View 1 (cartoon, rainbow, N blue to C red):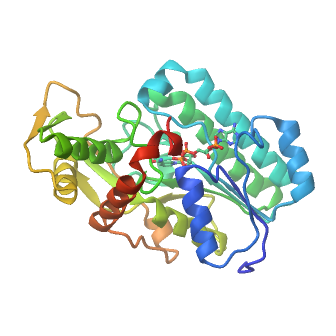
View 2 (cartoon, rainbow, N blue to C red):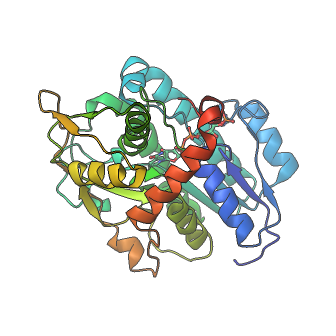
Length: 317
Ligand SMILES: NC(=O)c1ccc[n+]([C@@H]2O[C@H](COP(=O)([O-])OP(=O)(O)OC[C@H]3O[C@@H](n4cnc5c(N)ncnc54)[C@H](OP(=O)(O)O)[C@@H]3O)[C@@H](O)[C@H]2O)c1
């Protein structure tokens, strides 16, 4: 399926993930991309989604639209995260099925796997144990999406597929200190501390191990998936590289050019000691990530510097 004229609907094309996919497909020569902001098309509204598909009839649909938020937002609004994500994905999946789209790519995240899953996490660990309670609603919605794609494959033989990326970072990330993920939060903290000549205070001991994937690598994985016939319905997509939070902090400190101390507040929780996905099933198909952490963080910091005046407009969760 390597036709540059294919009509591709990227749901969530204004988000960090969707916009990276849009740029990547444009670079690869695709000329018929379509996107709608949530103001133009509220994907929770089934009637509006059906009318949009009836009119546009996209041939490929990439679902990068979701109600996304940090731990606090998930804990305070569990119903919203469960219900809005179910509505968005159900409407997209059903309309893609009804209007015979050729391929549907569903994006979830590693939170679908049990909290105590053995490491590295394999796809078959899905539904083998209890989830992390803080974002259970979000995870259950994503699991329902994975299962809907699996069921459509089984019942109708359609090419609906789910990709589960590890922690993502890159341009258009969320750098808001209250709601951001660990990597962009550290970039922000080291940058602010450099400007004010202060030390940086970080939570925990720095010992947990984490895996990060540049969002442009994920966009390339989506492009690869679009153009591959894959037997399975669910694939983990990570970098297969682990780094301790302490080493990550030191790398970011060096890239940002902060000279002061790093103070670790060990009275604060560390979180899960290790979170690594086993992406070998996807790698065996012939795909590999290309952006190492040092290059990726350097580019992300450059993006942050050029966009920091309008960060809230760019992204705020
Ligand atoms: N960020 C990560 O580290 C990470 C890691 C693993 C997986 N993922 C997955 O990647 C996907 C996208 O995440 P992201 O980080 O790109 O999130 P994001 O930046 O918040 O983007 C989400 C997008 O969804 C759209 N959206 C939300 N509600 C909508 C609605 N009711 N109708 C229409 N569009 C709606 C938003 O549109 P508007 O901007 O127009 O409102 C936005 O473009 C999610 O499924 C997430 O689980 C992300």
